[in-house]
Image 1 (cartoon, one colour):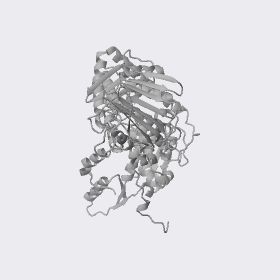
Image 2 (cartoon, helix red, strand yellow; image 1 turned 60 degrees about the vertical axis):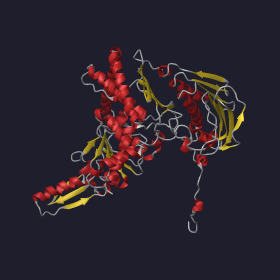
Image 3 (cartoon, helix red, strand yellow; image 1 turned 30 degrees about the vertical axis):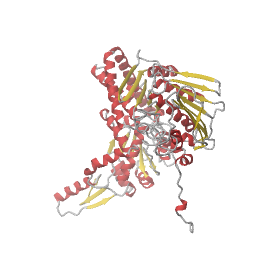
Image 4 (tube, one colour; image 1 turned 90 degrees about the horizontal axis):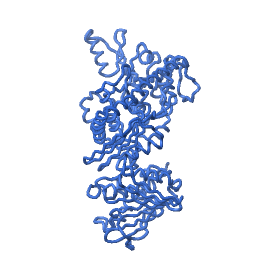
Length: 640
């Protein structure tokens, strides 16, 4: 706006805890009930860290009568209160008022911990109207009160009670959160899980809202947890004894698993007692190890019937598994620690599980053969279901009365077996494709906006993305766990993008989305990549189509060898929208002349595929940097 000045006075500099209050979602995910309870988990996890490292045996959590405040106590060493050497104030105050402060950045105080960011206690403090920290140590007891991150008074000595430990009382700020009522049932469930993961740990939960008392302690650890999950969900195990392993070599890996009669798998993963709801490298390692061990057992004993191909989904059907990893310096994706990104854990978990599970199956062939029969039955049922679906599809056309995206130019046919969906880049290419297509069997869906990176985004964000929503709506078969290939409206899903670097990028983003959320469509052979030409080469009333620069050079060299002085006309297409509809049909849409690549993941390449997608599409830039450095010499030409 004319006359408005933009100077240094317009720039705000927020100190650490002020930034937490201004942008709480960056630290706790959101300000809904999830973020509210995340405050409690941060304080509980600090107490659990004391127990995890052998300094505490009991944790007490109290939900007070108002339902909006809580206290967490442990019988650990107690937070230090002495003068901090560089901050020149009590260490207790530093921990609760300074971001990125704590005793977990090296391994001198904590070999393993649930939080390495150094923000937990201070973030809880910043987002609470009142927080009181009370510390009992061998040489005395102290307390300090805070409000919205700031000390109300200095650290003060109090009357020393028996024992040692730390107690934290806090009341979340109503100005920050949508509501501040804690859920007692959720708290009890989360606390009990901690005692499954740490055998021998005793946690007491006093719910004063409902006048209830809970005491949790599970000496059986993950085996107890596995049994309780199956009882709660009414899963019937098909093996009489669950498989359990515990491997300790710097990193502690504990796994319990059992096959049941359920028609889906049920897998829960944890790192340093924290649930990783989005999985990560330890979950990938678990899946790798199970599939490799079972395949090896079945192959060794020659159990696969003729005509049956076992997929990874067949192997994991009905499997209930728990993975708990305790390690130093875990690499999490985000402060809320929803996904583990530490690469080497995948190899450790996968290799250890494969070795131990394979040995277990070979030592208990009755169990091993029973599991193999369960998997083969799943494969037969899948095959029979697929064949039935194909027969139904041939007889009954799919209803067109669906909630289809408005920009979809659908085809006339209602027989999925002959229908094709082209997902194209932009309105311009969409216009050419709509004009050039076979309207009877070819549908066109142009993507007008940015395609989301589905590997980094959370599931809710993926579901909210308009472009990806349109793809799912057009396919008609659902997404994720709700995906039903029998409802797929097209036998071929063809990604048709420009033959340049931008087009390749969009194709990669779409493939990532299909890989993460629609993988059965890839496994079923429904997904293809179109190969539109980048160049048209004309000479002597003949035309050649070149997919790449190298392809063009080869064609030109071929012509020059026959006619050295030949005049060669070369046209480079800036995009599909530049092509005449007839040309686009002849080169890219016509089933008789087009070139398609079917997207496949060979069984032996599934682990490598997962790793490559994680490296290229994940948040860790180091993997991409190394990829570029390693492959830079192979790039002959850069399309900019």
